[in-house]
Image (cartoon, rainbow, N blue to C red):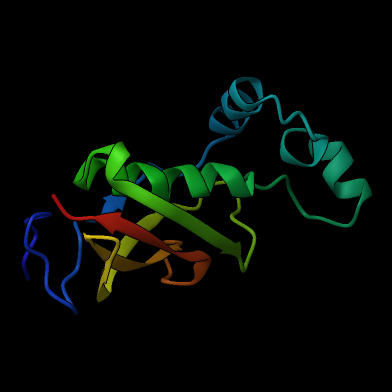
Length: 138
């Protein structure tokens, strides 16, 4: 496994990011910071009224964890694109593991880019958010 952002190879994993379990406090703080005050994320009565057993995490919170994993590995300005798809709900107490794997190297406009496959999974290994990013090599 080659972790050097200057010379990654196809198939290499990038450094992972694991979070503490998602707490109700995390959800409340994220709601305040993001401006996303949807009660489905912070109000248990509201969530139950709408058929959920509990509140659940903002999809963009988990996306931010993937972004943090990328920017821990390369400078933010090296990230050319970052796209995700929400595939399952992250529940309170889920511990998220973010992983990335180099899929390909691309040369375009005198720049070498690497395509990174991204996955954020819970503690049981179930994918919650998936996506990809294009990162410029320096």
